[in-house]
Length: 96
Image (tube, rainbow, N blue to C red; front, side):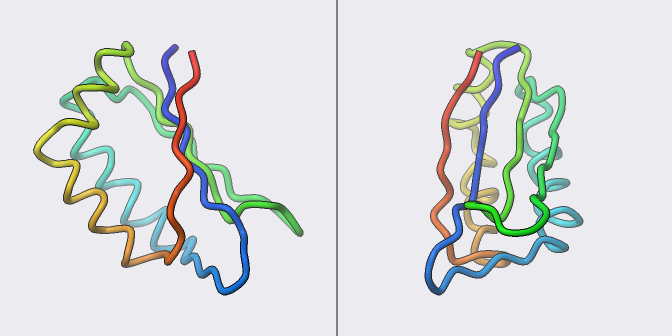
């Protein structure tokens, strides 16, 4: 299943609000991208010392659905919300 993987690496001066991420940001992502074919979101919050604060596996119906979501009119709203929970530029990549 095509998957968009978004992770937030740990670094000097990085901040990440996991509660906001899980309770507010991920529901926003679901609301904005489900109409484009988002079928699931699995949040990974590491325990203990790890090289990243969090990651999410966003499952889509197809590769075209990922493209549609990323180019959707709601995507700027998703990206603008980053400032509400982190100062980290996310690392984004695809898996199939």
